[in-house]
Image 1 (cartoon, rainbow, N blue to C red):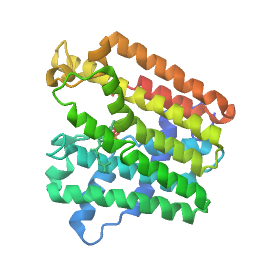
Image 2: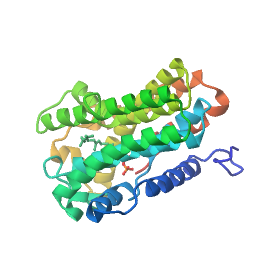
Image 3: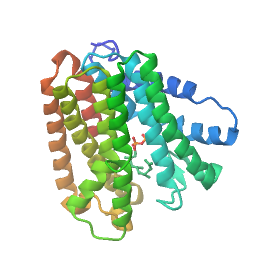
Image 4: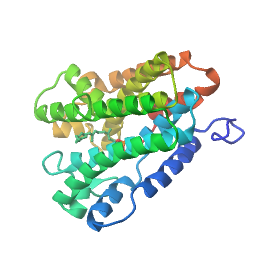
Amino acid sequence: ATMEGGGDDGFSIERYMASKAATVNEELNRSLPLQHPECLHESMRYSLLAGGKRVRPVLAIAACELVGGDEAAAAPLACAVEMVHAMSLIHDDLPCMDDDDLRRGRPTNHVAFGVSTALLAGDALLALSFEHLARGCAEHGVPADRALRAVAELANAVGTGGLVAGQVVDMASEGVDVSLGTLEYIHMHKTARLLEAAAVCGAIVGGGGQGEIEGMRRYARLVGLLFQVVDDVLDVTRTSEQLGKTAGKDLATGKATYPKLMGIDGARAYAADLLVGAEAELQRFDPTRTEPLRHLARFIAYRQH
Ligand code: GRG
């Protein structure tokens, strides 16, 4: 058994994630004191500190440790990635985007604080993310060239290489019959790209070689897609269980999903293939260090909610 895994039965991904999440939550809390102007900082803290699985920060830290780096060096990166994630959720929920009232079982940021504060809280979180990354790397003695490469990687994942591009294509696809290719584009950019940046930046900060960094990229892209395919499958099963319907939310809203485009069994088989591919990418790494990422991929594949 590893230290974080604990227990006699060997490694526990739940305990590993809880331990990393605790580190991240503490640092996030410290990074964002409730200062003037209070409504802005309250709004930022509302979305940043309100639960969430912390999958991206855990991935960043695990990738850093995989290549021999330590958790403390990766913690600022992990927090930065979660700040980007939090701001993307705030903006995604806005009336001009998905117009959602609920997130993580609570009112969305703009419902709680108003649209203009929510918009600005998102902007401020995005800026804070890069400030926190740059400052934190310097404070932990991460070599400047690594920090710079991480900044560039994360910035690409936010903008035209990632979240924003994915969101634009997603919005343009509303009410349109999208192809599997377009669906894949949307998920690779909206979801997988930030997971990819978390893993790649973790490997960069930890001092991984180019081959290791690119191995992490391929692993995380597969895991990111897996995350989305599983999400779509859960959406169907959850909705049909809860409402006694035969079709999921996707069919009701006309939104394209994997089950809709490949059938539920096809989507499940695809998820299984993605998991096999992700685990195969770990074979190039030191086998004594791959356990967390192997279990993280399985955790994402087998999660029930
Ligand atoms: C990034 C400048 C900038 C603007 C935002 C709105 C937008 C552009 C992009 C949308 C990004 C988005 C909301 C993608 C969906 C990602 C996703 C799968 C969210 C759910 O992630 P989980 O399950 O959530 O990790 P928790 O609640 O656990 O954190």
